[in-house]
Image (cartoon, rainbow, N blue to C red; front, top):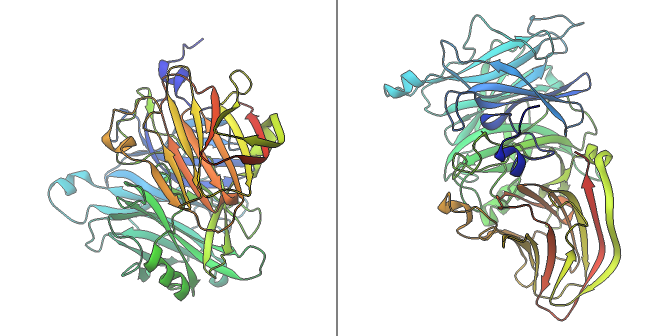
Length: 501
């Protein structure tokens, strides 16, 4: 029997994917096919810090239990294998397979480090590979690259979708601080269409890992296009994060809604996640539930400190998958919201439930030895809130604590991990609390959060605001308190579920 490392015992998550060993960052090439979810990812098999990139591979039937597979794509004569996407070519447009056995086609960036070191700008190109055995083995296209570099230093991370209206493939890639759109009929020959990003959005860093999808607006029949763009740095609380845009697409050009663009210039609060640890996320190809949702997953870290976090066996974890929805806000602006992926309900066991509870000052609401707080889903609802601060505190007997909550007086959510355990590995990790403005105005509040050893994923207001952050306590948190500075507050609904491992 293999003895688990200290990292595994203390930090390795229960329900989030992490590699068995060494470095992992961006999710790549995610697709669903024949009852299995395929997750590829940026992987360095020889070190626990970033290095020559490969595509790692993992498979799951339920998005909780993952089986790591052999490395899928290795560096080649064109360079390392950077981020990209994968599609199921059902119509065999590429000719790599058959209608009966459609090929899986991966589209990725080759990064030529030697050319970069020599000072060239054209060291990133786009290539493809295909698999005829559901992603287990791959053959690279003999005529790679399929998109050459036009002279842009950061030219990478292709995301491909099928555009049903015109029976063609659309490819979106990051090009410095814009994105570019291309089209193809066969995944091999690509034609440039348009670019997006000039004068809109955050430009404090390099644009990366774009995604593009159409959603039906919640409670309506209207459809809009959503464009995700990750940026490093430039996030709302420092470091790397992912912004989004909403608008229309005519098969050639993406144009954001005028109301959306005007609101973005005023507030710029259009982020997938306001925590520090959800980056480079993209959606699963071929996942069909409803036209009003897509399945999204990100890398649960931040480039400010990703290579410094106190795990040694491995570094890097993925967020839980989320179902993204589009809704029309009270300000008549289309916005995204996130909810925990539906499959999780099959793996939860209810441990605690209170219909109503009055809180004064600070009270422990989860006692030690009642719930495994290293592996839990918690749902709480407030009613008739006072204009004051509501703070949840997770803590252990070693003096570590994680604080998070909502200040109704200034309408801001927050996470404070300055006393959460091991924090001295980076000044950027806990120098100041993360904050997010509340996007709706009401005196009630619904909070749902997922705990998994070293992470919290907070879904406020049914996913309108999401905050994801990691932490490294010296021992597991065993208790949770609620601190309230008003006269008294009412918890209207309090449920705690443990998640089956």
